[in-house]
Amino acid sequence: MQTLANFGDGGPGPWILLFPVIWALVIGGGIALLRRTVWRGRRGGPWRHPPAGNDSPITVLGHRFASGEIDEDEYWRRLSVLNEEFGRKGGEA
Image: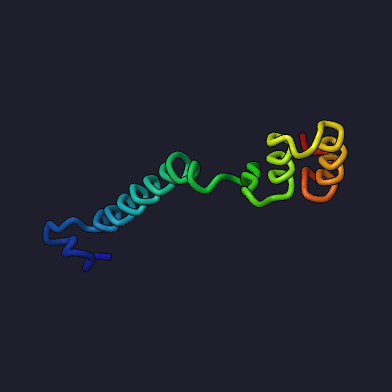
């Protein structure tokens, strides 16, 4: 340990090993901060559902109802069938 950066001749000694550790902590902390703030909004999370695309069956049904192609009874009947196949699964709210 005496030869580490000329410890006996007034060099920094074993403290020189502390600087890479400090830089690793600073860089790791910066990455963790970015992941928790900025990057989380872009990629979503496991608890978020991806938004339904314009070509999903539920969206197409909604557009047909909004344009007047189908009436309310037919809309709800078809929506219940589509929710069983494409909608929420299990006990999700």
